Structure formats: structure tokens, C-alpha cells
Image 1 (tube, rainbow, N blue to C red):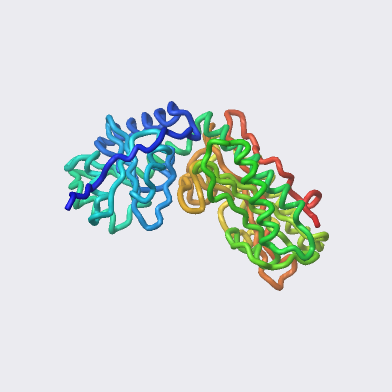
Image 2 (image 1 turned 120 degrees about the vertical axis):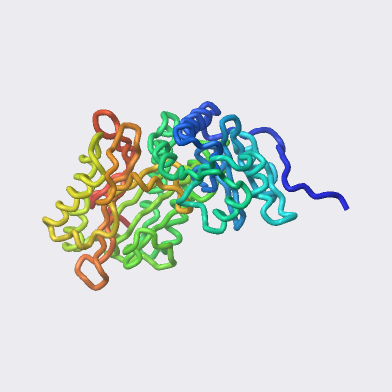
Amino acid sequence: MTARPEMYRFHNGEKAPLQFAVSEYEARIAGLRKIMAENGVSAAVFTSMHNISYYSGFTYCAFGRPYGMVVTATEAVTISAGIDAGQPWRRSFCDNITYTDWQRDNFWRAIKSVSGEGTVVGYESDHLTLLQKAKLDGFLKPSQLVDLYEPTMRQRMGKSAAELEMIRAGAAVADVGGFAIRDAVKEGAREIDVAMAGRDAMELEIARRFPDAEYRDTWVWFQSGINTDGAHNPVTGRRLQRGDILSLNTFPMISGYYTALERTMFVKEVDAESLRIWEANVAAHELGISLLKPDASCAEITHQINAFFEERDLLQYRTFGYGHSFGVLSHYYGREAGLELREDIDTVLEPGMVISMEPMLTIADGQPGAGGYREHDILIIHEDGNENITKYPYGPEFNVVG
């Protein structure tokens, strides 16, 4: 019987055009190697979708299988399952090793073939499971473990010029979806029908702007009535009724990068109490945007918006923090948790960061003004303030529709 390999290199076809130039990925790896040198790390072993995507250009689809990337002083290699054949190599700027499933844990044997054994290993505490941590220890036998979760997160917080260009394009695609949704809102229409109109418009726009990309996971959460109470509530078949509160949420995904547009809307008319709450949320949104400046801390900004809502007896209806980072991010992975507008985050804003402003108030069903109110813009922090790259209008003047 022919011996079956533990791993192999299946470099099938030619390298695909990536979202960014090879020089962009080389600069990211150089930044990572600086972090590794500062922490005495010989081999960085990444298992998360966000860091593998950020450093290699390859965004994996796990489907129950482990994926990885190993970076040393001289090598950068993605590690992928045989089911994906040559696609991970084509979509990695660097080398790729395919592991086989002829025997258990060939993934870790492939990792060890690059990292070596008994070295100082960097890992991600925010992603590595207890099961996989035990396998890392057993196969790599590290002399020391160094957690790279926070320093790599901080590296990802500062966006390059190429990233900012791509994020601007993503925000523009989100706007396209928003306008398509606005056109589709009609009394009697189902949430799912409106959502599909927005998603289809965005996917066509992404394909127009990025003809060489891979397309997956762009989506819309279009919510109505009580379904607006949670930011991440799924789409249903509920039919829109006159006077309904609506929540428009468009999410284009481009090569691992997420952008978003979120707006409060009403079908044809808005009652007085709903209008009062909506206008207060819009005012908080505008205040928040004005506060996003270099040298302001996330906690300070949060406390100022809290005070605004407290003065209006609305703070108790706030449901989450007021904004978060953008970049390599999805509903599956990522998010730079150190850049969120919450009371417990002391990060100071710096030029090159990208952050949302998205206050949300939720009023319980049966109460006057019931529903979830949310506005969401994406801001790039500059030396002298911020740049709002979301162009779809917010507020009652434009968003009482149907």
C-alpha cells in the first residue's frame, strides 16, 4: 500500500490577484516580526480567521477543520485542509502547506514542520481552544508561550492607506444597499424581500468595483416592528405595516473586510413619541461624531454620550457600546476589542484608526415609542478630527418611507 503523506504543497494554478499588493502584506509581516522580536518569539502560530486573513490575504472557511498560519524570522506559511485544494495557496500572498486527514492531528504536524520544536511560540489566547492549546503543547513542546492577542490587535488598529481606500469603498457599497432597501420598502412587503433587494444591489456593486475578488457573506438584516429590538436579530417573513419602525442594516463583505450602514426608518408615518426618541438618538449620534478626535479616549467619549442620554431620561434604554473598530472583521470573526466605545476601554484615538458611531435605544413592546432606534456611520480618524465615509442620510426627513 502506498504511504499516505501527512502534508504536501498543492500550488495549483497561478497566484490570484489579492485585495492588496504583495508589498502591503510584506509590511504587515515586517510589523509582526518586530512584535515577535520585542517579545522574544521564534514562531507565531495563528489560528484565527482575522489574523490569518490580515497577514496572508487568505480568509478560511473552517467547516469544523483547523486552519493556521506560522510566521518565523524567515518564513510565512498558511496551513490548510485538503478539502480546499489549491485555493488557500492562490489566495495567500505567501507559501501554503496542505495537511491531510489520513491520520489525526496532521494539522499540528504541518505547523511543527515550519515552527520547529522547543522554541518560543506566540499564540492567540482569544481564539485558541483548550483542546487545541493541549495539542500545541504536545506537538510543539514550546520552551515558552507568549500571548500575541493584544499586540497583533493593536497592529491591526492602525490602518494603512490601502486599507483606508478599501474601507471607503466598502462604506460606499453599504450606501448602495441602503438606497436599494429604501426603494423596496412598501406597506405589505416582507422583511426578507426588502433584505434581498439590498443584498443583491451590494453584491453587484462589489463585483463591479472588485472584479478579481472572491464573493461571499455579504448580508442584510432588515428588521421591522418588534424585530428591531436587537441589533443582530435575523430577517423574518413579517410583512411591513403602516407606522412600523424599521431598522436598515447593510453589511458588505470584501476580502475579509466588513463595513456597515444602519438606519432607523418608519413606514409612511411616525407617531409623536417615536419621533421624540428617534430625534434624541440622532442628536446623540451627531454629538458622538463630534467627539471622535485624536487624543480622546473611548471611555471619555462614552461618558459624554451617557450624560447626554441621562439628561433626557433615556440612558436606561441604551443596549450596548456606542461604536467599534473596522478592518478585518466579520460576524464570524475579528473585531479589535481594544477599540470600542465603552466605559471600560481606555484606548486613545489616533490618526489612522477607523471606528463607528452607533448609539442605540430600545423601548420595550407595549410602551410608547416601542422599538429599536439605531444610526451607524463609519469614521476615519485624522490629525485634525474625523472623516465620515457614510453618505446615506439619517433622520426623519429622509427615512419616513414607503
